[in-house]
Image (cartoon, rainbow, N blue to C red; front, side, top):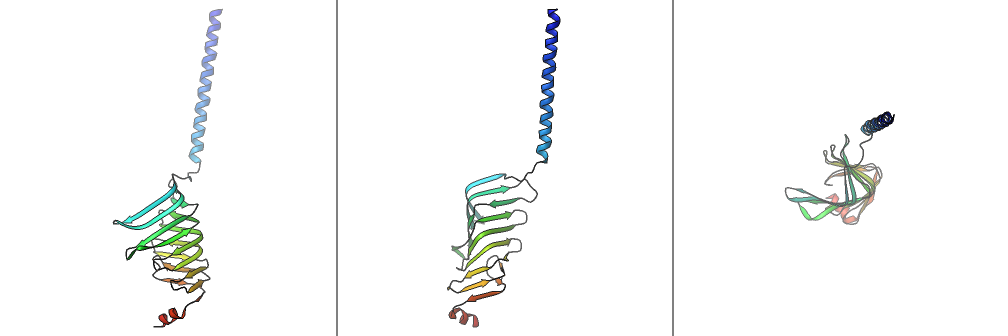
Length: 196
């Protein structure tokens, strides 16, 4: 009798351990199925107190600082984002000691499209000293074009001002730009230079 009781206890223990094994394996399978269908839209890289330097043939073309930069690379349209603002200096080989600047409260860069957007008190200063202020700006790097539909306030190097009420388009080096529905206050010196 005692012998048969021992066998039944062993059988119960064996069945119990098998049941636990199957429960755990089925839970694991459910987790893998669930994880496979979850969103992959989370940062693959996070850089705190970022300082980025970009060079072309040894020449520094760009310096960027941001409190935090996040890279989203695990999705189809990969992008990089600076949620807490960014400060960029861009350099021209003709004037390497006088960088232009871009400041914004938010910036996003679409890697594949080579397309940038900056939003929130955007301030741009060119190498020539012109200052642009707007709420958002977009840069299509492939087409070398910058544009916005927001009101643009411009202060020229001589102090004259211009307002583009319906936005502007420009070459990305600001050598040419077009304002829409514009008005301004130009100095007489600048008007006489334009007449020549």
